Length: 95
Image 1 (tube, rainbow, N blue to C red):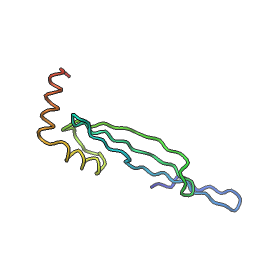
Image 2: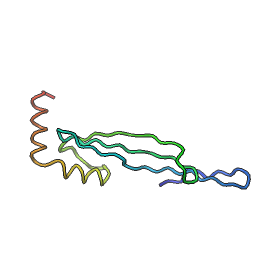
Image 3: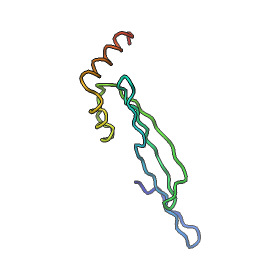
Image 4: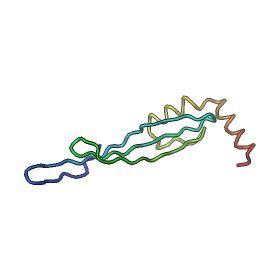
């Protein structure tokens, strides 16, 4: 959580904070891991805005810098069989 700004209005002070959370993780049939990070802006603890950033990771992709909970899902989902099947699919498609 990051405090963005504290604003005064009369005798009242409002606190604006920004929080980021991974609120959705999905594993597709071919092993691709999709996740969504929500950025929430709160005013005095009440959410007033929200944006999303989506990311996709393919089997055996480098996970450096990815959130720990996403890495855990990838490590569980990306068995040797899943990685081999994904690589075969990519080779067959000529990508």
